[in-house]
Image (cartoon, rainbow, N blue to C red):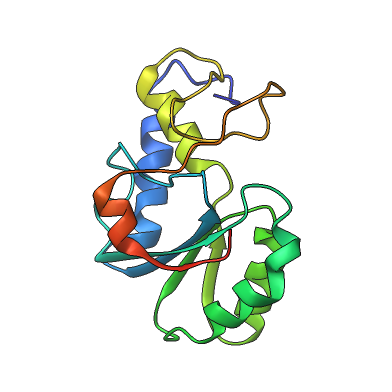
Amino acid sequence: VMFRDNQTDAPKKRFAYLKKIWDGRDCIFVEGCCTGLGVGNDLFDNAKSIQRILGPAENAFSRYQEILDCCMAQEKGTLFLLALGAATVLASDLCKAGHQAVDVGHVDLEYEWFLRDEGCRTPIDGKYNNELGEEQVLLPIQDEAYLRQVIADFS
């Protein structure tokens, strides 16, 4: 929603290009415990597999070393997609160690806003957004597929 062309087919093209990053790949999402990356939409349907490492919804650096250690224990061919407050530093550390990691930021929220075609940022039920500037209730995600994908929880 941040681009002026959000009422054209350009956002659809951007998401199509983004989806190529994880197309057919084994992925590990490292995300805040209330992020719900890809839950309720098809953004990551083309990934070969998805596993999740959960961190705190806020202040992720408080558990950074544990999260990093867990990531380092994973196979090198896995693609890490990071949506966590410490994502930029984590991506750097993982890449220095030979892993592939991408800080995807709020791509899931952007995709949800794209799907709603409202042209602005709005709350998305069940997904925490630290940029809205309003009080949000942090609720645990109850989606069964999501819960099966969690391999570590540092929240």
